Image (cartoon, rainbow, N blue to C red):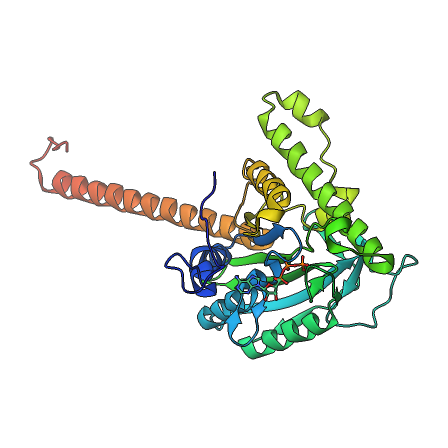
Length: 354
Ligand SMILES: Nc1ncnc2c1ncn2[C@@H]1O[C@H](COP(=O)(O)OP(=O)(O)OP(=O)(O)O)[C@@H](O)[C@H]1O
């Protein structure tokens, strides 16, 4: 089962799906979620060379992919009261690297450290964050990050991504005060699953391939456990279950997007070639399992803003009560005055009761 299915192998075919079509179907939902105050995520999964980077990034000039189009959409609708910042990282051989600032302080293992905040969740320490005001600024960041990203030539793909890349936009909106929402948009281009016998990799490429596969297995494991978790009915058993998010940096950073607070879309890319039958089947099985995950997206409001709004509602309620009480008192006063008037005007010894 699936929501959409696209064929982009032959531009002459009547069923050909352009980058614009993919954006209209999938990217617009991400924008809507962000403007409504939800977190959103799109990630691509598929074998090496099947078109993940093409779908996410595209050909920068002619055939823009989802990332530049989503950024364009965001800035075309953004208001004066919104602000955005972007981070761009890659996970290369299980190490996190900042794609927007090469000379970051690495840990002993050579990458940046991933930590977890009790409320806002996992984050990368010392990752450079860039305030962006318009599309040109964010486009520059995308291009810089793409230049820094680790790619290499394999037998299957001339520009094969050797790392998982996560481009994250934090989008804050201040609408009628007091209302502030923060949406995190994760746009993820995973490195492709690959078999050494088809890619003919050796040495460093082989090691990269092994690490790529390792984190994709960890992703698969998280997905399977989440599906099991959601099928369990008793809360006690649910509490005993452990979701192995921390088994890889990728799953740890995408914790919210997988079974958490996010509207997430998975794009499975497959090759039309029959030699790839096995990989295609495995990608579709992976996607089919992922579809069973139920996320719980909520609007991300600032807690102080929430408190202020609660207090404002309380003030409004008390004002209403005061108004009701004062009109009741006015009414009583009027009636007393009226009865006094009639008492004064009635014949001696009798009093008109109202
Ligand atoms: N729909 C498409 N139309 C035209 N060209 C495409 C399409 N999909 C992929 N390509 C081309 O195929 C090649 C491989 O695609 P891409 O690099 O996106 O694969 P990938 O899945 O990201 O691979 P890897 O996992 O190795 O990084 C690229 O040259 C890309 O431009």
